[in-house]
Image (tube, rainbow, N blue to C red; front, side, top):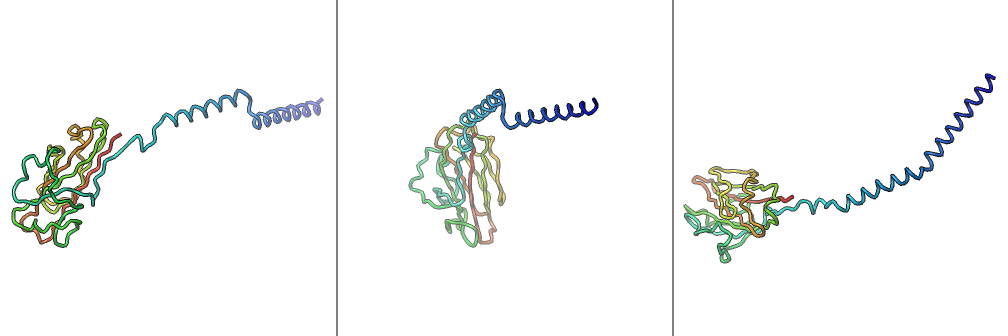
Length: 206
């Protein structure tokens, strides 16, 4: 009897193990249907979700981009920092701007004259201002500067800078479509003979 019980126990365990083996190797119809449902759901989600490139876009004005610029003493022309201003007769050149032994792509020796300033303008495109999540203005400047977007002052500095400035708070000043960034700067008194001015801009839409 004792041997028979052990035998039965072994037999039962063997049968249970064989059943488990068959279960792992060949899914039941219910399990197969569940897997198919999960797979189909994942595919639908992937098709419905936009790619990262579609979900976020950016408008970038990098170093070396072409700007319209003007060098003259005193203040700029009336409404020179507004989008409707005609700058078609201004010279054009890649940023940065400068003279001496500084870092620049466009030489502007006329800035050496006492009281001379450089005014630069560049357009950029925004699809939907309400979807803008970040605006970053990067400036390398050996002199004071004032930056405007669509005629609105967004930042000014009276000292030499080399930094990236978050101006996302001015997103409400953007227009759908074409916009304008305009910056004025000048070499400070007592400059050692080198001057560099390098603006760049990044705008991200979600």
